[in-house]
Amino acid sequence: MSTGSATVGFLLHDIARMMRKRFEQRASSLGFTRSQWQVLVHLAKNEGIHQAGLADILEVEPISLVRILDRLAARGLVERRQHPTDRRVWLLYLTPAAHPSLSLLREIGEVTRAETLAGLPDEDQVRLVTMLNRLKSNLVVACASPVDAKEVSHG
Image (cartoon, rainbow, N blue to C red; front, side, top):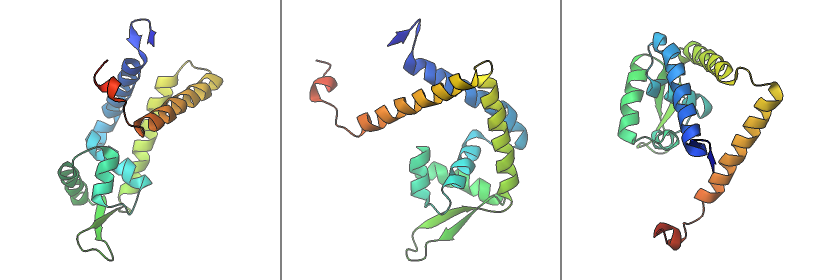
């Protein structure tokens, strides 16, 4: 469906890109790259996860994640612990030193969201989140289903 000159997909992509850009403008003063703060935020929600699992969540190659984790570990923000039964697997945890930075990143996120939603009444904000969750649910279901061969051949 097209709404004016922008399709829903392009509009959502542009909004997400601009929100990241605005967040980065503020977060850069903390000395974090976007990749680093994304790792911290996702690790906070998934402490004890193994590196490959976090790479999947972030949709990055495991080797790229290792480099980011090395930098965060060097700053004393992340630690790797060996899996209790599998020596090949490393589990990831935030250190206590990471929590003040994580709090600042969350504050920056709140300010960025407030800027994004400025001028929208509370009930419209609730409705927007409800609709976006519906779009996400629709896509989760769609992505779990195989694509019809006719769709692939554009026929």
